[in-house]
Image (tube, rainbow, N blue to C red; front, side):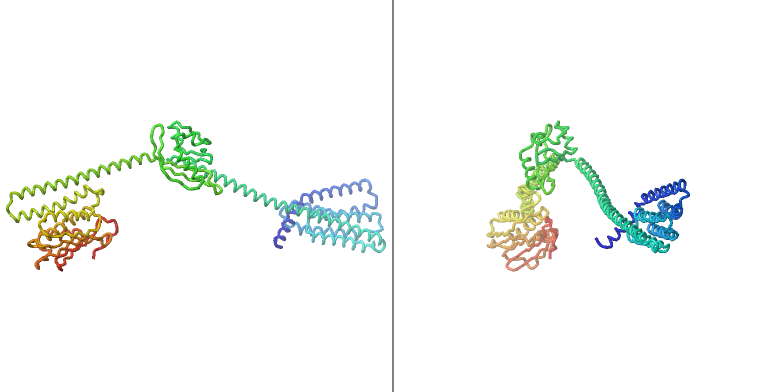
Length: 559
């Protein structure tokens, strides 16, 4: 504790000491005045003619001072100036001591009363006034000095030195004893004050702690109420069990289900296996695992109630206390309706797939019927140009029918394996021109595209391959036709159809409407937002870059 804190503590004690002594000061002075008045009245009544009465009347000079001190103890606004007021009034008492002694005759028979009266004044100083010791010492010394000075001036020292020194000795002795008693009494009171202050501080802290604890308990109660209200508001089934597999809590939804199913509602303290005899051993093991590991387990559970089968999603959550799992909270969400919806959706999807397969199968058959009708028409025709046109149309229809056949046979109705489709298409076209001595070479990278991509690519490949077989090798010369498919990126595909035949005539143009096939190729490439490049080196080569529009990735522009 620093010196400043000690000084503040002393001042606080002194103020407390003086204020707490007011009742005793008031009572003591009242009793002193009463006794003094009774004693004087008694002597005046019965011993009025005795010479000692002279001193009794002189001693009344201190009475107004005592009355003033008593009055001060009742006036609260003056309490903050008790120390200076006490000091001034005691200085007046010193003056009274000097005045009475100065007018006392040492040879008078009542002179001994003066000495006794001074002794009482000295004792009263220490008994009644709880002033700082410095003030008490100063006033005591002044009282002793006033007594000694009065006895020197009135001739007591000169004519009765023995009496003078003995009375001075007794006054000093009384003063010393009173000082020591006051010091001890003040020390005891200071310790009591310190203890009371410490107790008051501790009591205040205790009250604050009690208040905080009460607030914490109220907050905890509110939190528990909110916790239970929140748990009860959740439509899922929730229960909490302890390490002995006994129920600690069930929420309202689970209790309502217990009522519907005839299970006991008051399950607190009962073992889970007694309440749910049908519960599987795997669930018990999962709960024990959560107790051991502190992990949260999420799973599915199927169980049978009296009136229905429940497909539930379970979540087992550990509840920790002092770093250990002491309870496990289980949340069961009834997924039966969702499961029914999912099963219905799956059934609808399967039905749609069956329908789509049937549609593609029927489209393919219908296209086959169209091809058959065209063949019937050819039997009665001798016009070679018409026959050529119908054959071209037939090949285009076959290429479209082939797509529907692949979709019909494919596991994925949204995607067509482009490599397998092009290989089948090229094989069919080659078989159509079986009399030609042309070797077909394929290099096809596996990739899947939507029907929106496969259909125009099939028509393009049909036109280019048909033209190559027809015109690249006149007079049935030997040759080679290559079809190449590769992925440049995830979104960009490249199709190359080339031959080592005689090449295109100089007047060839993709924009010419005279060649319907090439015109169709140009339109289809534009439909694909692709590009086509034609090379005349060592035959003819068509390079087509197109975007796989079925890709879900960000589109990359073609260069």
